[in-house]
Amino acid sequence: MKKFVLFATIVLLASCSNNKSYSYIGDAPTEEISISSVDSLHSSLLGNVNFIKLQEPDETFAEIEGIQVYNDTIYVFDKMERNILMSFNKQGKHLVTFGERGNSKNEYTRLWAFDIDDQYVYAYDRGKKRMMYFTHDGKFVKVQETKFRGDSFKTLSNGKFLFSLALEKSLNKLVLTDNSLNIEKVLLSFNEKDKDNLAHNNILQKTDDKIVYNKEMSDSIYIFSENGKCINTYYMNFEGAKVPQEYKCDFEKLYDEGKSKDYAYIDDCPFLGNTTLLVPLAYKGRYGVLYYDLETKKVKKPKEITIGVSNLLYATKNFLYGWMDSDTYGYINKPSVPKDVSSFIEKGGRVIVCAQL
Image (cartoon, rainbow, N blue to C red):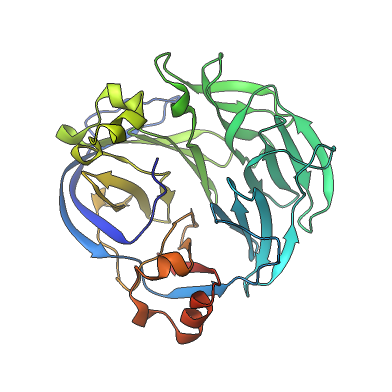
């Protein structure tokens, strides 16, 4: 998967069909969104933008790959390079760095995903196949081993967990666990033809009281309640631009053969707003976001176009979060950025961008 960069919003000609009432998980209804063509591109993001200048410590991120906001605290994650999880307040002040790399009980070898609830900050160490529990102020509490290798996870209101898994012999893809991380129910499984490179980007996103799941190169989007019940499935019908199965099973081949511009696919995990489903798309070589109105069942344009932001990573019901640095600053509409923020970025600072939906 290409790392998604939100510089433009694709507005598409689409329609929603409710003729099919089938489901993929349990009895959840499925809505089909048929997409026929790209109508236009707009420079993106919504109005009422707030910039948070991060006051980073010396040992900091190489790149921001995860953002989550909980009770006015911003959690920021570098997954691949520095492999570090930190928290900041809404003024950008560094609060806590969670754990450190190593081989002792309270250290990790490879953090892969995190989540937060009222009690803990949870950090999954994929290297050791275990969950680490921290207090919000960074104190290590305990670890809990898993019998699987997780890819992404979210905590549920009933104390259980929703886990997407890496591709292993069991072929389990999405599971519900109990509060001790034992698999309680298999919700989805990998196809036996899936290859190892499809085990990545098996993503869950939490938006307040709902969770969104999408698998790379899958055309289906699953919505779960806060207790882990699948309540909706959205199927993206790309019609003539649908990626053939041979490329879905080996997406690197799609790029190696230069075929990515011939097809359309979900490019990153969708986000769920209060009345909007936001779907990052690649459409025949163009990248952007589809804004789907959950009430009218139609694709809609953003209310206001003001500024672009790179690396859209998190959403609540009313806000989108991304980030900017000096590398991405050159792509945006600079007059829309306050002078103090511009100066901060140009001097090497990084900024969390919060935009109202």
